[in-house]
Structures are given as structure tokens and as C-alpha cells.
Length: 244
Image 1: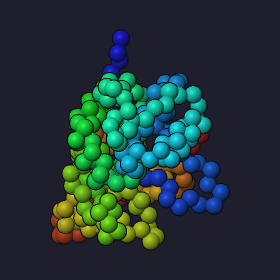
Image 2: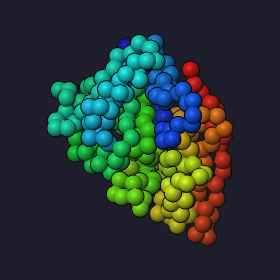
Image 3: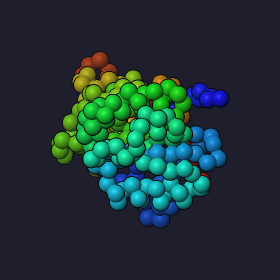
Image 4: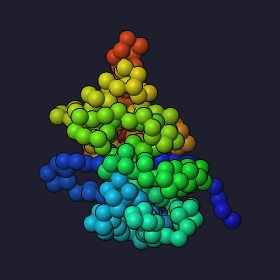
């Protein structure tokens, strides 16, 4: 008998610049599998945002396997799907993990293949949806992206499973995404939303933020909203360090 589980999304900022001695590469994959709550999870990687890079897929699978026994697969869309029934394959998963890369290209290709509809169905049936960077932005209403260039553009046509905007790699030092996200929220280009520093992830249950977790200590997420005068106000949400 199929049991419907609660809908969960783990929206992550990966660690762009690991500190010296960093030992938690790939731990956000482990976090996602923990949310599935099964001993041997079925986990599928979707790496559309990096053009189904074979190198990335192989590296991800090796990291995922290092956290314990799992039934690992990947869905590639270039040059055609590598599974005969995409919907059935994805609905059979416990975790779907989406890579970083170009969120603009990801959304365009997904919509062409109707993955937007299929992934919503998976989410509603309780498959854990997770991902880093582009794989975080995509579930929200929008965010700030470098998909078009280093100038950083506001994207407002995300999948919208979550009724918030999203900022990733929202670090205090030398990270232009942080300021650009706040300007876009303040001037109304993006709705209010949540931003994550490197290593931080937002765990949503349904459409509500349930908790903030991190693979690094002393990190925050931020809730950012317009202040009504063209600016913004923000609130720090300290993250719980969650590693094996």
C-alpha cells in the first residue's frame, strides 16, 4: 500500500569556498536522505543545470554512495531521456536531488519535458525534493541568478512550489548576490523570501519553513522583505549544524 508522506523540500547553498580542513563535502546529500526516513533510499540526481555532465553525475553518485547503501540513479534529458517513463521513475524515488548550474536553462528544459508538472506531483506524494544553488532557486517564485551573466539578474518565473523568493550563497563578505537579492526584494521585483549563506539549507514542510540547517557552524539564513519605502528589512535565522 502506498503511504503518502509529508511534502518536503531541502533548498541548499553549497559551499563555494570550503574552509581549510573542511570534511563535509556532499553532506547535504546525506541531509536529504535523512529526511526520506528509509534505510535504503531510492535517490535520483537531475543534473540538467550542468547539461547532464557525465563528470558531475559520476562525482555525485560516488559521494552519495559514501553515506550508506542507496539505490542511486540519474535522469538525463540530453539528448533524450535515459529512462523510458520519466514520470514513473521519478514517482518511485524517495529523494530527487537537483544540481547547481544554470537555473534558466534548467527551467526551460524541464518545462519542455513537462518535468515541472511531474515534480510537483512527486512533491505532493511525499518525494523529498532537494538541491543546491539552481537546485534551490528552482522550487521558489524566483531569485537572483548569474545564468545570463556576471551582472546578476532577477529571475521571477521559478516553479513556485514555495511562495517565496530565494537567495543563495548569501555570504557577508565579497558576495554580490547578497546585495542584489535585497535590492530586488526592496523594489518589488522579487517577493519576500529566504536567503542562505554557504553551507546552509532551508527545510520546508509543505510550504512553510520548518528549520534551517547547515554543514558549517555559526551560519545563518535570512528572511528578507520590503520595508514599504523602497528598501528592505531582514531577520537572521541561525542554522543548526547537522552533520553525520
